[in-house]
Length: 325
Image (cartoon, rainbow, N blue to C red; front, side, top):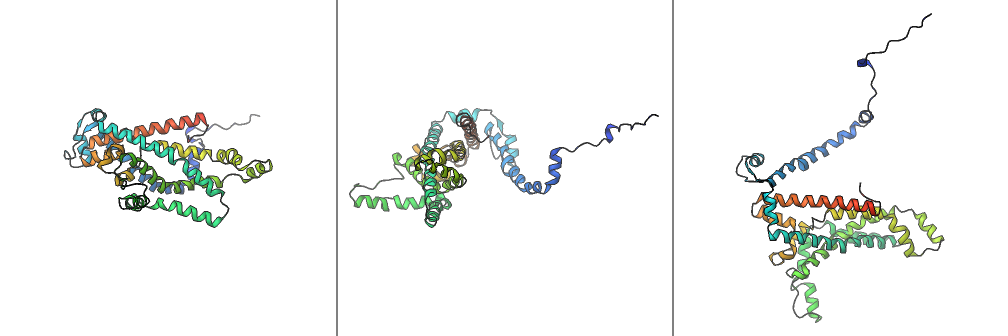
């Protein structure tokens, strides 16, 4: 007897398995709903403003249209003329040199400091004293640069605490003009930036140190390892990934030499050694209303920063086998 066989269903009626993402989305749709405000923020404040990049390629005139978009569309397209105009300016090249010089000074002097502070604080045994030190060193992070600038201007002024002490002790005969001396101003920027931010950066390394397996230290003590050997062979390798991550991020921010800090602290007497790309954009783009030139400089600044991040990440991946991606 022939056994009847079922006819296959048409392709349109076959049950199609759901994609893994669709199943995951159905289970966690509430999490995606929570993403909506963040996505709106990114689109409105991060992506839409990117349309303004086109100002760098036109001879922008804000009065040619009834709104910014119409003004851009009505402006004459000039291609890379604004970039060529920027690169021919001596003050731009000076600002570029100052940006790299100040940033690399801050990296060379300040980047190792939070690591050192974290190692010292982590080794303290008195818990109360440890908390007091942590609090004291990261409180300055919450001060604005306006407050910090005013504080140091009072301390370092001609009649301030530092100059009065040095003059009365006979170390110097005349007060030092810290904020007007081209040889000292860059170091003043490094010092004030360290005073304000080292404590806050230390927190990251303290968090990394808290995750180091204590059994490694116990085994090292049993093997007779001294404190410096434990530091070199256990502590530093354990937080190396954190150090590399922060170094990549810091090198990526080389083009940001401290706009807020320099803007409130510098003056025309030290423009030659302190005017950076961002303050240059501020003075040219807003001060002189040359929006096309200012946008061209800003776009160049961002492109260099991107290259530095990608390059540092690649070098780190090939040398120490650790990177962001």
